Structures are given as C-alpha cells and as structure tokens.
Image 1: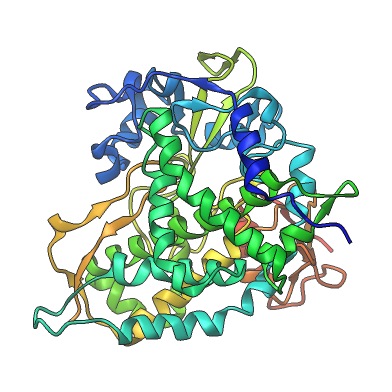
Image 2: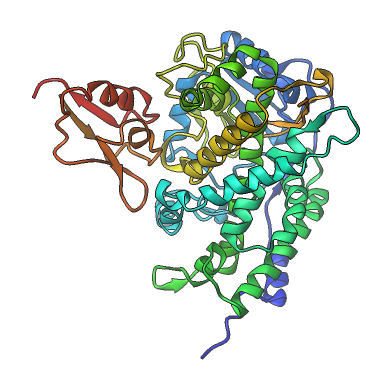
Length: 426
Length: 66
C-alpha cells in the first residue's frame, strides 16, 4: 500500500514558490462617478447598491472602472445572462475580483474548482459533487438544521433587559457554518474560525495582493491540516469523498481537493448567512409582510424566492478571454466582469415592480443562483437552510423590529448581506 | 397539455420539481425530469405553467395541444 502524500507541507511549499500571476496597483478611495470608476468595495455600494445599479442601467448599462486593473459592470438582465452563458469568451479562471489575476495556465481548472473552471473540465469536476447536493441528498440535513436553529434561539441572551439580539452574528451566521462544516466533516468546535476565513477571502479584495495572500494563509493551513487528518482517518463526509475521488483515472491533485473544499466552505457560508440576514432585515422593517408570514406560513415559499430576487447575495466575476466588442463597449483581454445577479434581478425589463418586494410574487424567474453551467451547486442546500431558518424564527419570534436601523451594517464585496443586525425581540 | 424539459438548457435549479412535484422529479444529479409521459392531468395545468414561468433557464416547455 502506498502512502497518500499528496497533501504534504513540503510539496505545498514547492508549489507556492512556482506561483505566478499578474498584479495590479491597488486603487482605493471614495467613488465619485459610478459609470467610470465603480468599486464594489466602496461603503456606499455595501450600504445600498440598488439606486446605483438602477441609475447605471438607465444611463450606462455597462459601466467601467480602472480599479482592479480594469473591470466592467453590466446591470441589465440580458447582458448579465449573455455573459453567464458565454463561456467561450468569458473565463471563470478567477471569480473574485481583486488586484491579482491568476496565471492564464490555471484555466480550465482554476483555484477553486468547479466554480473557477471552464469547459470541458468544469463539467467533469462538477459531476463529482452534484449527487451530494441534490434536493433529496440535502433533505437529510433538514431535521438537524431545524434543531440547530432552535438551539441558537434557546441560547439568545436578553438578560440585560433590552430584548435585543444580533440576528446576523448570533443566528444567521451560525446556521450555514454548522451545516457545511458537518457536510465536510470539520470539527464542530472549529465553527467559530470559519467566519474569520470568510472575511479573509471576501472582505480583503481591496488590499495589495501580498497582504491579501498573507490573510489567506491561515485558511489554507487549516484545511491542509484537516485534509491530512482525513487521509489518516477516512469517514463518510465530503472531504473524504474528494480525497478518494478520481477524474480521468487518477486521484485529484492536492490543489483541486483543497481548492474545492475552500469553495464549499466559503461559498457555503457567506451566501446563506447573507440571505437569512437580509430576509430577517426585510421582515423586521415591514410589519405587514411579517404578519402575513406568521399568519400564513405557506406564503413563505413565494416570499423566500422574492427575498432571494430582491436581496440576491451573490455577485460573480469573469475574465475576458480576448479583446472583443460587447454591445457598445470594447473589452480587453484580462478585463474583469463584475457579474451582478442582484442588478439583473432588479431590471424592470424583466420584472414587474422590480424595485418592490412583493412576497406573493408567483412568477419569479430570478437569477439569484446564477444562470448557465455555473448554477450554484449549493442552491438546494441554501434554500433548505433559508426556509428552515425563517420557519423556526417566525414560529419562535413572531414579533420583532429593527432595534436601531442605523446600526445595521452590510458586508462589502461580492457577497452582500447584513453583518450587524440588532433586532428587538421582546 | 404536455410538458417537456429541454435538457440542454436545464441546470438543475429544481424550480419545476419544487413547484409541481406531481409533474417533475430530479435525476441523481438534480437535473429536472418529466415524470411519466408528460401529459398533464386535468387540474394540474396551473402547476405546469408555474414551473415553466419560474424556470431560470426557460428549460420547461409547455405544449398546449395534446
């Protein structure tokens, strides 16, 4: 029997030394003109991106910025869809915009397959994961998720008499962290670490690349440790599944295994945390909608989809493969595309009352989980977590309001959701 | 009325089997499948229309004549 040494520290360091890529100068500071200098790292964008998107859709539907070494922002549904479907001209080699572009030869695998992969490799890498994320497979986690949501509410501490809890930090955040941690087979006592990892990956895109690299190191150190532990002690979880998985007759490379775990962990947390938080934020501020859902829990099925449309948490990115025309603009090879599904979801050309939250909306062809081959792998997981989190909250805490609207903060970057959400619950 | 799924378009969002589980199911990878011959029994037309109208990929096709 040969020893599986794919994940050794020595080999990892050798690979790290060979890393190349292209750096761009970090341009920061406030945005004055969103059509020519947009930045999704700007606090104004984090606080309320929708008026900015609505304005751009009218006057400059494919906006540009010199930041991040050059990027474009389409805000019309049709443009977002056509880019999502066009894997010939737009690469997923990197899907988080920063001041670092990974080397061209990282395609078609990318750093975090399959989200970072292009065809034809993408399809094969994705097939390894699909069976674990079907609606049926995810159904196995519903009961434990419901129990966990209840235990979080049981633990709310309102002993100071103010009756205020932070629904983002004390509720929404923990639900996806626990579920994806369990699916990957990571120790439950490590759950608190995951939130910091998410911040290190997604909240640091504005930093100079070297500094950002340093911020990412603890995540990779942790996951390499966990993978080595799983090599020694295999069990029935996604980490062991990836260690044993084969493509084209060979086991996966170590970067593929760890890259996919990074994807599942990070994408599994920030996104659903944001969706649960944004839904509770809406209901805290809209009494009629809250009372409706408390009185008619069945209405949650359309309400949930409407929250996903109106507060879609996830914006993706692409890299332009070759110089090209896109509509009225000339895109250059290696330009980023900020692929805003949230902006597409509020395009009045595709949705009646696009800027309104209509919880009974029956026809809702939204793109919150993306379009085309990169449809969110975890969409069935996210919908289960969101539904259970809201069902449990509304049954346990039917009355709640924003304790201090000005104290609500929203995450910066490509994943948007509340990060401080003080709610008065009694 | 009859329903079909365009498997070139379907990406496994699962809206069809969420909204009309009597007409659609999922395969082992989560892609939508028409149950049986796709003929929509009387009374289930609304489910078929909702599934088609909510598919993000417009992969659910309705044939009105049978």
